[in-house]
View 1 (cartoon, helix red, strand yellow):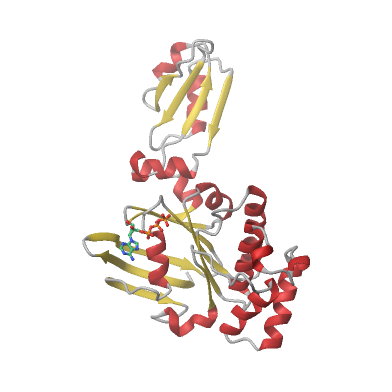
View 2 (cartoon, helix red, strand yellow):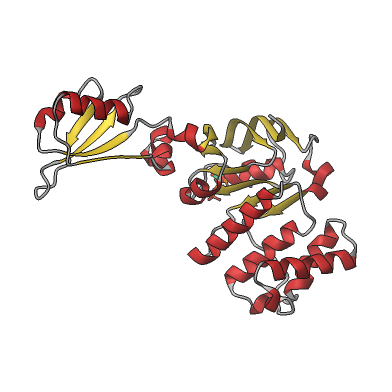
Length: 304
Ligand SMILES: Nc1ncnc2c1ncn2[C@@H]1O[C@H](COP(=O)(O)OP(=O)(O)OP(=O)(O)O)[C@@H](O)[C@H]1O
């Protein structure tokens, strides 16, 4: 695997608090990788260590081939959780300014800023001050400022927070475009649905510990599959070697059952067993577990 980030046994203590406890993970080149976890899990602390903003208490980081992000800062874009654009600057100038900070020539930075605004539906906002933009527009401008120097690696801390659903969709589309053009993206979120739609890879952390690292399919495979059945035949209760079977207690719908498959059983095996035992099915629905289900399963209900 061609990796852009390799973090090994990262630990961060703040006084008596273990904010990050022995977390290791990789970010493959070209991937969209989500760092998931509830508030206080240690996501921002992990990203800040990668960026060289805070020193790990222990552990090793390799980022774009360097042991310290500051050595490769021109190749990294970072959107912090606390948004900060100079409110009196015009949108185009604000983006160009960040480009200049990353080493672009003034004329190149301005040209790119104008092109980015245009390409992202904000052409009309180019000469408006940041303070005159809506929150969603200002956030988009800040993201454009983060990518104006065309970084190889983009790190975003909670990029979706504070955006309405339409702006969230717009941001998802922009991130997909960037990834399609070869940018590696690492972002933190506590909203599982964004990760579910966007990510190739996931890192789940809870209370500073890594709970899972891998693909979406691998994450889903950690949870026993659940099937929702409809049948009036109570023979369904005899399927105990395959699953734990519970009637869904709704008086007006006595034919509904929740079937939690045992490890190693899959919905096809269950379906075959139903036919074999002549259980007449009125409904059979085998949904994928959501990332929320995966998180609850791995980290426990009190963490989600
Ligand atoms: N500079 C600091 N000094 C002391 N404690 C800190 C500091 N930064 C973070 N913490 C603590 O470390 C823990 C992890 O915080 P962190 O910000 O990494 O969580 P997070 O997963 O990003 O949460 P959120 O989604 O709320 O931003 C929290 O208990 C937090 O209070």
